[in-house]
Amino acid sequence: MAQITLEQNVGGIKGLCVITPAVHGDERGYFFESYNSADMAEFGIDIVFVQDNQSMSAKGVLRGLHYQKHHSQTKLVRVISGSVYDVAVDLRKNSPTYGRYYGIVLSAENKKQFLIPKGFAHGFQVLSPMAEFCYKCDDFYHPDDEGGLAWNDPDIGIDWPETENVIISAKDKINPFFRNLKLDF
Image: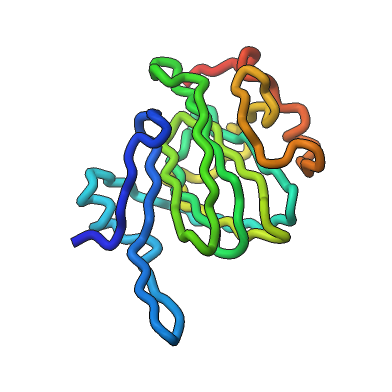
């Protein structure tokens, strides 16, 4: 029996899933399985992850929106310290939800995970004083294959929790708007 609950096609977007683990706690603390391929297979999800990544960011940092052009990655993301607002934007041209986004608060407290399939731009904004963010990828990172989407694109209309004191990288400041993306995947 699976040690997770899984919400599929969240926000009405095919492929996006929110995973909540069964947490076992007592006076000593808690335990949960952060990943179990057999549990995922029970829900028809068969993914081989090849890379784990971790970042730490301060409050107000917004990372993204990023994607790989030809080496698209499925990601399983979670927060191990603090909280973030996590967003995925559908970039699959033949999808009925092309250009739509879904956002969710991920935190060390709620222990939720967000499964983002290939063909999505992804980003997050830190809500707590600090956050540690972890994610699994089913393909390796290719720096020369990186793409980006403007975090504040009016056509996408992401409802970020904070828009005034956003801290973004120089690279993310020049990401194009959705209408100017040259997608060939």
